[in-house]
Image (cartoon, rainbow, N blue to C red; front, side, top):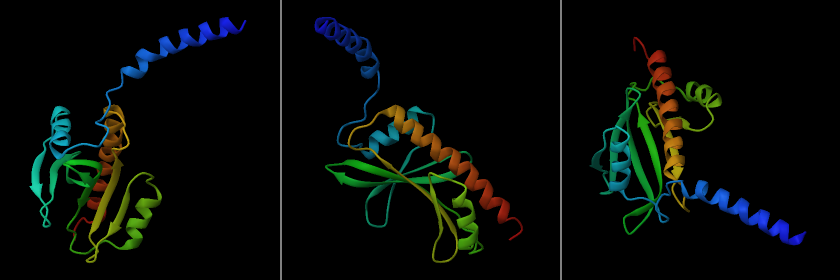
Amino acid sequence: MKHAYMIGAAVLALCLAPNAASANDLPANGMTVKEVARWLQDAGYQAQFQASKDGTRNIYSSAEGANFHIYFYDCKNERCGSLQFSTGYDTKGSFSAQLLNDWTAKNRWVRAYADDVNDPWLEYDVDLTPGGTYELLNDEFKIWRDSLRHFDHYVHERNQGK
């Protein structure tokens, strides 16, 4: 009887192995700026390299009719362990913390805040290590795009005529 269980477990492992191998793994130590740009471009999005004031590189892109940046964190030897999608709007200071708290209370994954001149910002952090898959990264990007679309609409709706 014990032998039958072992054979059953071996058959089950063989059946599941191809499914596990079909995932497209991210590099174990994170991604480079160039790899993220290529991933965006392969999905049909623009990816322009820019330098931040501190000299680090980021990517400028757009989706859902709105522009955004991708900033890189936890970097070692050009591979970065996390990234941040970020966008901000120049509303001439017309957004209060309460307006952004109202939006954030109804949106789970991303965070919105007002900067020091009351302009709205939206950010979403994504861990790339340890491990992960491109399928998961694509899912994270979908969450960002959906949130970006809703936030863009929210900002423009409340900023009309100002």
